[in-house]
Length: 400
Ligand SMILES: Cc1cc2nc3c(=O)[nH]c(=O)nc-3n(C[C@H](O)[C@H](O)[C@H](O)COP(=O)(O)OP(=O)(O)OC[C@H]3O[C@@H](n4cnc5c(N)ncnc54)[C@H](O)[C@@H]3O)c2cc1C
Image: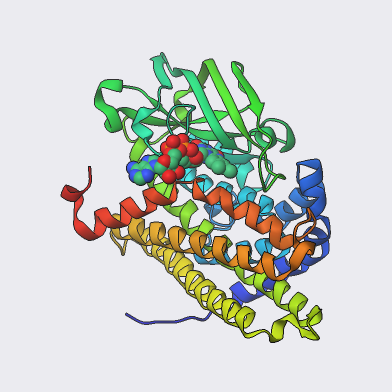
């Protein structure tokens, strides 16, 4: 198999465009994201003008039709500028689930929704989790029944990202790919995915006060007799669980990259600090104990970065029909697991080297540590990543 660690000229050119925007418009305002618990409209509009929200969406529906590796290059620049990860969540959730929605959505859905999603006028999220069921997806209770050419949805989704933005902030709103039962007797094979616009009649919602990455909302929504046209069903009836698992792979690969890049950026910031700050008559960077920790974390972050790109490469190969679905799932789970565990250890140490100054709401390393903690769970708990890897390595018969 040929190896190539180079990005293309087009990818590097795109990186420079995003970097310029990110350094000028995003980096100076990240504390505001946390304080106001939102990303300013000008930033969303600016990214939309750069076609960032349509990078992997099909050209036929207004997207750029590019691959996940190119989407990763954009994500790198977003994370480097915003260590709160709020914009990373906005971008990677929409990029992953927007792609899945377009792939399995009807022509009418693509024309009505994906064309707006590609231009950043509308945001697409994911809603599988419920108050009583997260990791155990089959434990969801929400359901849909067919009435003519509509489905009527009832149930409640919890700990969902981007409800406020899809309901209030994006010009044409947005919605979530929502997993419900259409036939409870069939368990996983009885689940179906629907695109549920957050402005639909019958939706009520409540937001949580999240621990970190406060610029992107996180909360619950209830569906009471929400009427969804059959064209907004994403994939066939009974395929929802499997389509959701495919979408998780995309999200996990981007999460892995965000964590690896966030770790590298935080280590750079901490390194600059300890080169300047002195203790006992010398820069803190001269203490070998600190140097060795920094070097170990850098080595792990570099490994996490490369594994994340391997996961994005696997997604690209899958789009080209050149790799098996289970192999992709295994690599994406490994990438998420490794990057998140690496990030938490590195950021914890980096914060400590920075002393009490790190324990403030403005310290980017502290903001990053709070953000990466969310990935103990978001888009699949770390233990579920290990179960997936074990299942693929040992065989399904060894996993319950
Ligand atoms: C910031 C944030 C954003 C989120 N955004 C979304 C979103 O947009 N859409 C959405 O649908 N969901 C979202 N979630 C929810 C997320 O998907 C769930 O938190 C996750 O799937 C875990 O489910 P749970 O929280 O119910 O934990 P549970 O399933 O109750 O598990 C709790 C813990 O038990 C352990 N555990 C569970 N099962 C096993 C097992 N089989 N083996 C070993 N240990 C196990 C793990 O330690 C796990 O962390 C978000 C979560 C967070 C924190």
